[in-house]
Length: 238
Ligand code: C5P
Image (cartoon, rainbow, N blue to C red; front, side, top):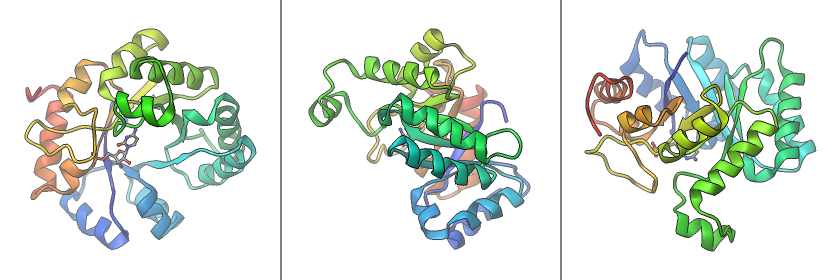
């Protein structure tokens, strides 16, 4: 799937997911399974959604010693998901180990592996005070993106505001997956670095991740189409 709109299935369990997906009959989607859903349902949620023909981004954001991440990734590769991720803050050796684990656990093509740079809920001020990082947020994201590239990863999770700089420094083949997406009429919630789908497209993002804007909408399918049109350039939104 080229330039997908990935829907974040931030639901407590299978039942809620199936109820939500009734809005999308016949659509083959790119779905993000996060910690809440995976910790509740385990691998069966991935098998179920794959069986329905959807692409899966398993968003567990691994961050541990290299050996542990390598073994965990071997297991995740066996689930058949299409994309997985780690925290770049875990370091280059950990990211290399993640790739090795994925290679070892995959029967066919290994899932794409991307690294979270700075969470889209983190502001520059929070990054400085909580992580004691003295450079700008942009520099920190670019540094992590470079590190991820050197470690052999396929891309990063970043905000739309950093996608252009990463694309021009590392190349457009390196994925920039951008959460923190809202239509201008939506509530930001806990997200800080928020942008519209249209803005993400103009900044060259490879994919957008949309959660609450769609999952909490009165009419999720209608909202999905609106976001998709803004993402694909059919609707002027930004
Ligand atoms: O509801 P909302 O659109 O804010 O959801 C964004 C999703 O993307 C959540 O599932 C969140 O965990 C995830 N995410 C993020 N920022 C990152 C990485 C992942 O918001 N840097």
